[in-house]
Image: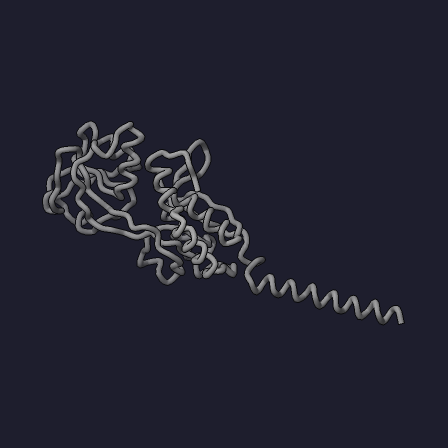
Length: 256
């Protein structure tokens, strides 16, 4: 009698363990762990400071993982590497602009606040249109494409720079007439030089682009897309993304 009871108990225990395992896998609690996250290397969104990665999108991605009950490893990388890894599936998640070439390979989860891409010169300067840039020297981030119209105008002198800080430095000493890029990083570069927005003239807005939380369709992991979107909506409602923007652009010490 006792062996039969023990056998029955063992069978029930095994069945319960299998049920727990299947439930865990179905909910994504096992398969969606340890995501590989890449943050685009573009200050203030992703950069390295004191040998540690940081930035608005770096922090935002980590918060999304945390509030989705996921874990992962986040690192800063250039767009070219992120693009290749999203296509291959070796990168699971990122935050960056939409690119037509990547649309077949990613799920778009949620949009972050849009960014103004501008051409801006020193205080007192104005550029009413792209036509007014003809003959001007524009500091332009190496590898970036902010405006096809500017890129293809041979009369606009493009001076490639390694980062926007270099561009703002060149602007401040008269080596270029203007800088092109998202307005927030340009202002942050000025802060590095102990300058404020009053350093600049009126910006010419050449485009407005929206960064998105993106997940690779090629990932081998079962990533809970709905959980990520729910976490994003909660964080947005709590004003976390605005706090991150203020932290990195206005040098506030508080963090979400």
